[in-house]
Image (cartoon, rainbow, N blue to C red; front, side, top):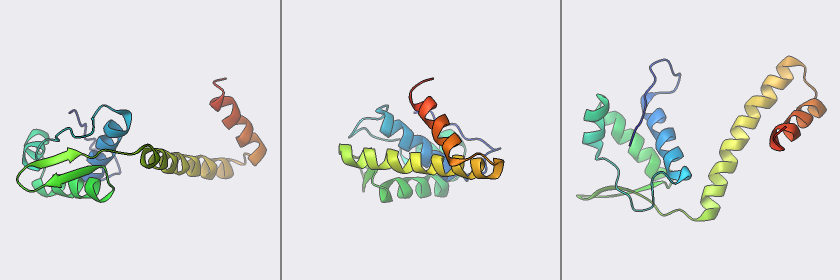
Length: 124
C-alpha cells in the first residue's frame, strides 16, 4: 500500500492518509476484508508518529471504511453500493462547491458554468 505524504499540503498528515486509503477502497484497489498494515508498521514505514496513524485509522473506522479487531488488526469493511455512491456524491459536491465559489469570484454566470459542466461531462 503506497501512501504519499506531502509536506507542502495544507492538510494534516492523518487526513492525507485517510483520503488516500478511502480512494484506494473506493477504487477497488483495496478489497473488502483485506488487512491494512498495523498502525505501528505504517508509522514506522512512513516515519511518522504512531498517534498520527492511530488518528487516521480511527477516522476511517468512524466513517465506515474499515473495521478494527483487537489483537487481529484493521481490515477493509465490506461496502454496499449505496454507501459508495453516497461517498462519491459527497466528494463531487465538495468539488462542485469549490468550482461554484471560483466561478462567482471570477464573474462566471450560472449559465456559463452549466455549459462548461455539460461539455466536461460529455467529454468535449
